[in-house]
Image (cartoon, rainbow, N blue to C red; front, side, top):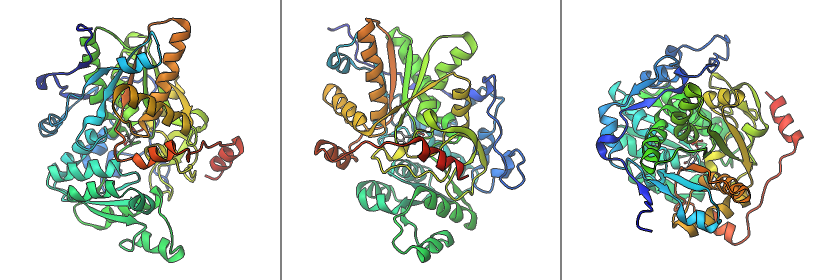
Length: 451
Ligand SMILES: *Cc1c(COP(=O)(O)O)cnc(C)c1O
């Protein structure tokens, strides 16, 4: 027993100093985002009015493999990094598998999820470029919480538009943002043109990510020294998240193993890319055989059932056209509890990688995800975020296959966050009040046809 190490940590001076930019190593580069009016490929300058300039350059950088993490961001990573790599002995035992299961525990970040890895970087670049205010939208509130804290760290004011229904249903995420000093507004609101227009037409509108994005972008455009930020989907967000996989690479080495399978849940692709890309580098450059599996909800299956096409990133059609797997920007996913996975499209890097078969995707039903989450909680003592439950379900499925074949595969998954602020979801699951959602091919075709 005593020689079975449970957790692997890096010393502060071993925390990676550079993020990994997989775009530089990809054989087929992602196709360029297009200006929706001219259909011309976007240049970094085209994005300057909305995002910090350095983030725009990172977004389209297909040249530099390693991008230095600024000193100030590294100092802040030390507050919670390295995050532990954990051997899931309890889970292995619970499902009686010969597989070796490891997870990277991003739930130990101060805000409870991986989102802070990019929030700190984005707030830092805004500050450095003389920006005073940052704005964003948030659904479940994970990204809003991360940005609120990161803004405070770098002395910025944060204005967060939270989808009205989750503002009311998830009061503790709102209090977390307010505790960090952010100004939180339920969206749609009367504070923007976009919000007023919607409320005039539909006074009882419950809000959606699409309208919250429109409000946040409008605020950024009309306020001097204010930039918009986004917590997923974009390539610079996945870049910042590679800190997860780069640490895991060193920690797996400490454990004396290399993963055969890497699994993460999938909303826009940032935690999946974060843990996968540093390992995928060895697949691209050295032909290493590792399977990379993205676990998405069956109710929002852009990777398993969507179409690769140019589509808008938001419902309103304000953003550039992105080459991605999508269900259509008007797709309205069912109201599942994994709010962070309810997005119609996938980031452009992961989309190209899926097209080129470097990775696979599976879809997981809501009830299966919570069953996996409860099993994990009882075996490892950590209550996973509803989003992370999808990765756990996919891990259990692979580990069960190992049980059938007797193979001792090494499986690594990313625990993207904890579920301690999501206990109403667990309450409903335990009371038997949650359901699965079936999507027909016609539902999906109709949504894609609409663009
Ligand atoms: C936002 C979120 C996700 C989904 O976003 P990705 O960009 O796909 O990683 C997953 N898990 C948690 C805990 C989240 O907050």
